[in-house]
Image (cartoon, rainbow, N blue to C red):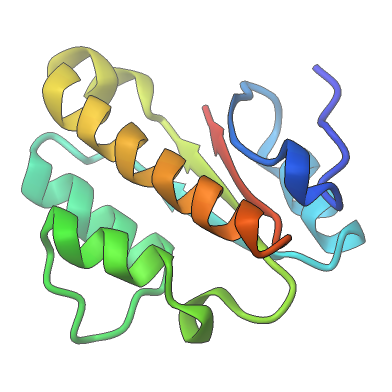
Length: 129
């Protein structure tokens, strides 16, 4: 699957992508976006999911490990950086299947962050693998 143009903030969003993480990393680098891979292979609960997100997204130490804190962090310019971000959620399928309600909440939070940054013309991409 060919990746979209990561420069285009208006097209940013949540995208299913089962290709190589390197493909996303190289595309992010070319678009001068911060690339943040998140490994969800060991996420077997909401707490483990939030811990994996905190680690992979390099959220601040004071990240509160809850949905509200995640939403706040994703809309923080200091965390995002100046050019935007491309996040890759690897090994997501097991969590999605086992915890559909928590996955839906996560998708809602990520979608809200996408829309927040779109209004500011900043690319915020999330690739789900």
